[in-house]
Length: 164
Image (cartoon, rainbow, N blue to C red; front, side, top):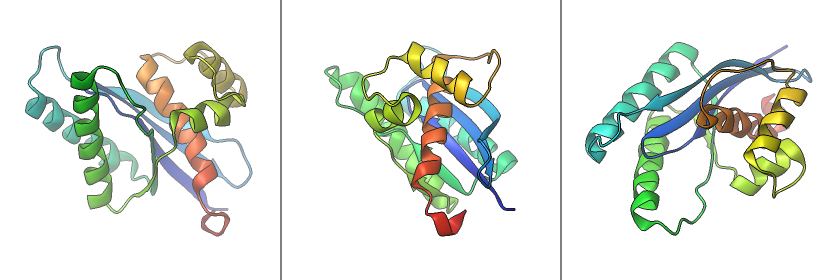
Protein backbone atom coordinates (compact mmCIF):
# COMPACT_ATOMS: atom_id res chain seq x y z
CA UNK A 1 0.00 0.00 0.00
CA UNK A 2 1.22 3.48 -0.90
CA UNK A 3 2.37 5.88 1.84
CA UNK A 4 1.59 9.55 1.33
CA UNK A 5 3.84 12.16 2.91
CA UNK A 6 2.66 15.69 3.54
CA UNK A 7 4.43 18.77 4.87
CA UNK A 8 2.18 20.89 7.09
CA UNK A 9 3.19 24.54 7.46
CA UNK A 10 2.01 27.31 9.77
CA UNK A 11 3.59 30.47 8.27
CA UNK A 12 4.97 33.19 10.51
CA UNK A 13 7.20 36.21 10.19
CA UNK A 14 9.90 34.98 12.57
CA UNK A 15 8.57 31.55 13.51
CA UNK A 16 7.16 29.06 11.05
CA UNK A 17 5.80 25.74 12.24
CA UNK A 18 6.52 22.67 10.15
CA UNK A 19 5.37 19.07 10.43
CA UNK A 20 5.83 15.94 8.36
CA UNK A 21 2.99 13.41 8.45
CA UNK A 22 2.72 10.02 6.73
CA UNK A 23 -0.50 8.18 5.91
CA UNK A 24 -0.80 4.66 4.53
CA UNK A 25 -4.19 3.54 3.22
CA UNK A 26 -7.00 4.14 5.69
CA UNK A 27 -4.69 4.20 8.71
CA UNK A 28 -4.43 7.33 10.82
CA UNK A 29 -1.65 9.72 9.83
CA UNK A 30 1.60 9.49 11.79
CA UNK A 31 3.62 12.52 12.83
CA UNK A 32 7.15 11.83 11.59
CA UNK A 33 8.69 15.20 12.43
CA UNK A 34 7.61 18.56 13.82
CA UNK A 35 9.62 21.66 14.53
CA UNK A 36 9.79 25.42 14.20
CA UNK A 37 11.98 27.35 11.82
CA UNK A 38 12.93 30.42 13.79
CA UNK A 39 14.97 33.56 13.23
CA UNK A 40 16.31 35.52 16.21
CA UNK A 41 14.25 38.50 17.43
CA UNK A 42 14.92 41.78 15.58
CA UNK A 43 16.34 39.95 12.56
CA UNK A 44 15.93 42.09 9.46
CA UNK A 45 13.21 40.71 7.17
CA UNK A 46 15.48 39.74 4.23
CA UNK A 47 17.70 37.74 6.57
CA UNK A 48 14.67 36.15 8.28
CA UNK A 49 13.33 35.08 4.88
CA UNK A 50 16.68 33.49 3.99
CA UNK A 51 16.68 31.58 7.31
CA UNK A 52 13.11 30.42 6.57
CA UNK A 53 13.96 29.26 3.04
CA UNK A 54 17.12 27.42 4.15
CA UNK A 55 15.26 25.69 6.99
CA UNK A 56 12.43 24.68 4.67
CA UNK A 57 14.85 23.35 2.06
CA UNK A 58 16.56 21.18 4.72
CA UNK A 59 13.22 19.65 5.72
CA UNK A 60 12.25 19.06 2.08
CA UNK A 61 15.63 17.48 1.33
CA UNK A 62 15.50 15.18 4.36
CA UNK A 63 11.84 14.09 4.24
CA UNK A 64 10.96 14.47 0.53
CA UNK A 65 7.24 15.26 0.88
CA UNK A 66 4.99 14.95 -2.17
CA UNK A 67 2.26 17.24 -0.82
CA UNK A 68 2.11 20.31 1.37
CA UNK A 69 -0.63 22.02 3.32
CA UNK A 70 0.12 25.69 4.00
CA UNK A 71 -2.28 27.50 6.29
CA UNK A 72 -4.00 30.38 4.51
CA UNK A 73 -3.47 33.70 6.27
CA UNK A 74 -6.40 35.45 7.89
CA UNK A 75 -6.68 39.23 7.76
CA UNK A 76 -4.68 40.95 10.47
CA UNK A 77 -5.33 44.39 11.93
CA UNK A 78 -1.60 44.88 12.41
CA UNK A 79 -0.48 45.77 8.88
CA UNK A 80 3.25 45.49 9.65
CA UNK A 81 2.89 41.95 11.04
CA UNK A 82 0.51 40.90 8.25
CA UNK A 83 2.92 42.17 5.59
CA UNK A 84 5.81 40.19 7.09
CA UNK A 85 3.73 37.01 7.29
CA UNK A 86 2.54 37.42 3.69
CA UNK A 87 6.15 37.82 2.58
CA UNK A 88 7.18 34.70 4.51
CA UNK A 89 4.26 32.83 2.98
CA UNK A 90 5.44 33.92 -0.48
CA UNK A 91 8.87 32.45 0.19
CA UNK A 92 7.23 29.23 1.38
CA UNK A 93 4.98 28.91 -1.68
CA UNK A 94 7.84 29.70 -4.07
CA UNK A 95 10.14 27.14 -2.42
CA UNK A 96 7.45 24.43 -2.54
CA UNK A 97 6.63 25.21 -6.18
CA UNK A 98 10.32 25.11 -7.15
CA UNK A 99 10.55 21.64 -5.61
CA UNK A 100 7.37 20.51 -7.47
CA UNK A 101 5.51 19.80 -4.23
CA UNK A 102 1.72 19.95 -4.60
CA UNK A 103 0.37 22.81 -2.46
CA UNK A 104 -2.98 22.87 -0.65
CA UNK A 105 -4.01 26.00 1.21
CA UNK A 106 -6.68 25.36 3.84
CA UNK A 107 -8.11 28.31 5.73
CA UNK A 108 -7.83 28.62 9.50
CA UNK A 109 -11.53 27.76 9.76
CA UNK A 110 -11.11 24.64 7.60
CA UNK A 111 -8.21 23.51 9.80
CA UNK A 112 -10.12 24.11 13.03
CA UNK A 113 -13.20 22.34 11.67
CA UNK A 114 -11.15 19.46 10.23
CA UNK A 115 -9.46 18.79 13.57
CA UNK A 116 -12.23 19.59 16.09
CA UNK A 117 -15.43 19.76 13.97
CA UNK A 118 -15.84 23.39 15.11
CA UNK A 119 -14.62 26.32 13.05
CA UNK A 120 -14.38 28.36 16.25
CA UNK A 121 -12.07 26.07 18.24
CA UNK A 122 -9.17 27.59 20.17
CA UNK A 123 -5.57 26.35 20.19
CA UNK A 124 -6.07 24.27 23.33
CA UNK A 125 -9.02 22.43 21.75
CA UNK A 126 -7.04 21.84 18.56
CA UNK A 127 -4.08 20.42 20.50
CA UNK A 128 -6.35 18.18 22.59
CA UNK A 129 -8.12 16.88 19.50
CA UNK A 130 -4.86 16.18 17.69
CA UNK A 131 -3.52 14.27 20.69
CA UNK A 132 -6.71 12.19 20.82
CA UNK A 133 -7.14 11.57 17.08
CA UNK A 134 -3.49 10.88 16.29
CA UNK A 135 -2.81 9.12 19.59
CA UNK A 136 0.02 11.51 20.41
CA UNK A 137 1.80 11.64 23.74
CA UNK A 138 3.35 14.83 24.98
CA UNK A 139 4.89 16.57 22.02
CA UNK A 140 7.59 19.09 22.70
CA UNK A 141 7.66 22.30 20.76
CA UNK A 142 5.99 25.61 20.22
CA UNK A 143 2.37 26.18 19.22
CA UNK A 144 3.57 26.84 15.69
CA UNK A 145 4.63 23.22 15.26
CA UNK A 146 1.28 22.00 16.63
CA UNK A 147 -0.49 24.29 14.16
CA UNK A 148 1.62 22.78 11.38
CA UNK A 149 0.56 19.28 12.47
CA UNK A 150 -3.07 20.44 12.24
CA UNK A 151 -2.47 21.91 8.77
CA UNK A 152 -0.85 18.66 7.61
CA UNK A 153 -3.63 16.53 9.10
CA UNK A 154 -6.32 18.54 7.30
CA UNK A 155 -4.21 18.62 4.14
CA UNK A 156 -4.80 14.88 3.64
CA UNK A 157 -8.49 15.63 2.98
CA UNK A 158 -7.51 17.72 -0.08
CA UNK A 159 -5.57 14.92 -1.79
CA UNK A 160 -7.67 13.37 -4.58
CA UNK A 161 -8.66 9.73 -3.87
CA UNK A 162 -6.94 8.43 -7.01
CA UNK A 163 -3.62 9.81 -5.70
CA UNK A 164 -3.84 7.77 -2.50
